Length: 85
Image (cartoon, rainbow, N blue to C red):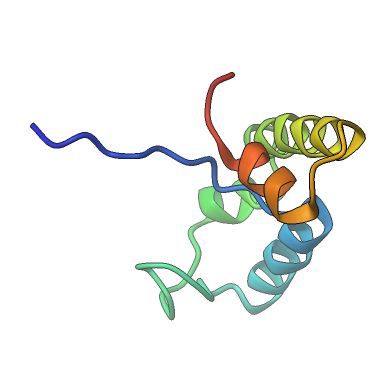
């Protein structure tokens, strides 16, 4: 069994929000395996939903904590994307 590296799909929340806003406005997936397909009502709701915000908050917390510890922006981003501790 091969081990897979799990990563949080984290980006700076403002970038994520901008992408989600564009997708909602166009009502079409703009990236990923469903690119070009129409958004369902559920998917459109998820773009601004609570569940995505949770990952953003966790990632932002880890990112800012890493920067405060003196890490570079690239190192902090890698830490923020890591799932778990």
